[in-house]
Amino acid sequence: LGGTERLTTTLAERLRARGVAIRTGAAASRLERLDDGRIGVVLSDVDASEVPAADAVVVTVAAPVASRILGSLSAEASSELARIEHVP
Image (tube, rainbow, N blue to C red; front, side):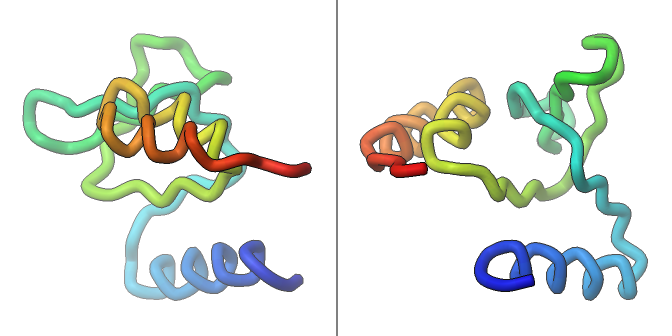
């Protein structure tokens, strides 16, 4: 492991060791602000009526994908991310 994958893996391991619930490998299609202030994570592979809630979310995808996911949560962040050129 190297680069950002190592960073993400290490962060997940350390947070789990502190009792934080983490879900990795799930495809998020959108993030949204819930009425209670937490972040709703709309997952691509789960019924839309099931929206896990989180106090914080770490987005570890390319800028164009992050822009799309964050669009309804933060138009400003989405716009900034959309300006970043991604070279696969």
